[in-house]
Amino acid sequence: MLVLSIIFAIYISTALISQEFQYRKLLQEESDYQAKIESLNEEIERLESKLESSQDPHAIEKIAREKLKMVKPNEIIYIIQENNE
Image (tube, rainbow, N blue to C red; front, side, top):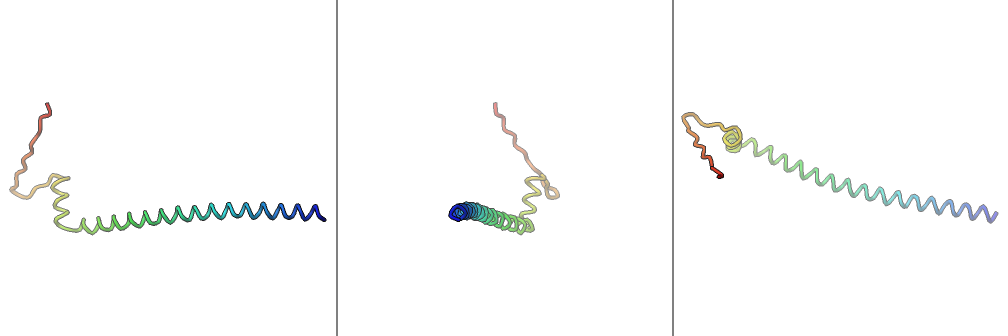
């Protein structure tokens, strides 16, 4: 009977220790996921802000001029090239 009690106590102890390790691992995963959620929410806010600003006619014109090299009618663009010699 004593041997069975000792074996049962060891089994319960190892089960509790194992559950404690699993619990700590899950807490760490939860913390990691919360940080990732916060990061993604910030990214969403940044992208929404960028989307709102992209609807602005001045921003559209700036992009068209700088990236697409578009000009207004009867407008002349001067390109200055630098010599790096």
